Image 1 (cartoon, rainbow, N blue to C red):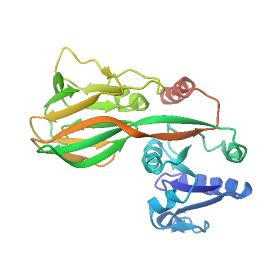
Image 2 (cartoon, rainbow, N blue to C red):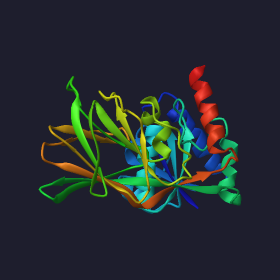
Image 3 (cartoon, rainbow, N blue to C red):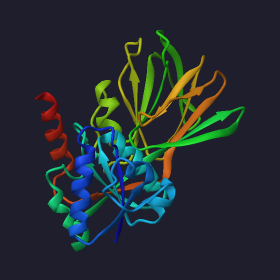
Amino acid sequence: MKVALLPNLTRKTAAKVTLDVAARLDGLKIEYSLLMSDKEKLPQLISAVSDIDELIESCDVVIAIGGDGTILHAAKYAAKHKKKILGINAGRLAFMAGLESNELDLLSSLIDGTYSVDSRMLLEVGLYSDGQLIKTDYCINDAVVGRGNRIRLEDIEIECNGRLVNEYLADGVIIATPTGSTAYSLSAGGPVVDPSVGGILLTPICTHSLFSRSLFFSENSELKVKGKSELNLSCDGEDSTVVERGQYLVIKKADFTADFLRIKSDTFFDVLNSKLSERRA
């Protein structure tokens, strides 16, 4: 077995956790490698490559070390290469983490096979101009379409399978997977959806309307999003893309999944209650 290590070394504890993970893998005789840019900060670790696609293509399992943003970013790369991923928490809540930093002894499950695979749907987000696809992105949590830095409400029109759903006067809309229902959508008043349920969740952000409830669509739905002025798109909280006036987005279920390794036996609701109780504390 070979592991690709993808730590977020901007996290205060991530370097120590990464070294601890490497030590555990050494003890299990599991080969691992990381990016050259990370090796420069962790010279104790020997094997490294310069290209992330080369790193992931050469491995059997990806281990991402950080918070949810780190794990989601790594999971998209892993999903495109059809590799399994394990998240290890070196951040705060980390809903997507399979292990906490004090549970590294459980990495032995990679050898004995006592783990399960949790497949999560992704959204494919296409940006169109004059009917032509000009950019495609993917998200495991959500695609957020909104006003960017402007302090004003935006007119945003939503269609589902070619039929008008609603026009929102709002700060924006969140289009999320069930996995993403516990992220930004939850903060905006959306429901928690069990990720084993297929579907696409639409939650408006600060809408100027008496109707501001979330809507849940079939996983086979195709949503079209367009505004009357320039909008901004962010997938999984990453750098935004400008959606110019006249352009539009088509959002649908991707044709591949993100496959997370689950070593512990806790359920989605066990994790939800545990993480949110940490937030209350």
